Length: 160
Image 1 (spheres, rainbow, N blue to C red):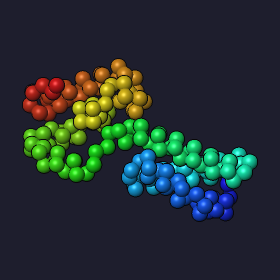
Image 2 (cartoon, rainbow, N blue to C red; image 1 turned 60 degrees about the vertical axis):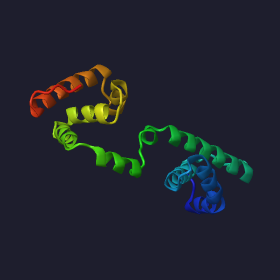
Image 3 (cartoon, one colour; image 1 turned 90 degrees about the vertical axis):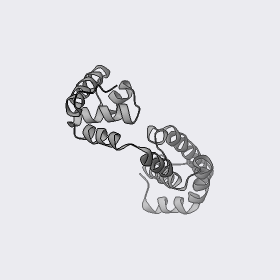
C-alpha cells in the first residue's frame, strides 16, 4: 500500500491525463470522476514498486483504459437510462400500471426482487440467479409463486 504522500503526488501529476482519457472513452463527467477515483484507489492499493516514472505512467494508463472498458460493459451502465428518457416514460405510464408496480413492491422480498428484476428490468432467470446467489431453477420457482401471489392480490388476472 502506498503512502499518502505518494498518492497525492501521483494525483497531482497524473489526474489531468487520466481524466482526459476517461472523458475520451466515457463521454460523461460523472462517470469519468467515478473511474478516476477507482484508478487512484487501485494505485494506492498496488504495492509493487515501479521501475521508473515512465513505468508508473504506463501502468496508470493501462489501468485507466481497463477501468473504462469494465465500466462500459458493466450491468449497471448497460441498464441505465438518462433521466430525460425516464421522465418521458413516467409521464406515459398508465395509472393501472402504477397499481401493479405498487402491488409487486408489496410482495415479500424474495418474490418482489425476482418479479421486479425479471419483468421491469428485463433480466433473465440465469442473470437474476447470479445476482441474488440463487440457482436458476429456484428463480423460476420464485417467479411462479410470485405470479400466483400477484394473481391473488390483483383479483385473478394472469400475469404474463
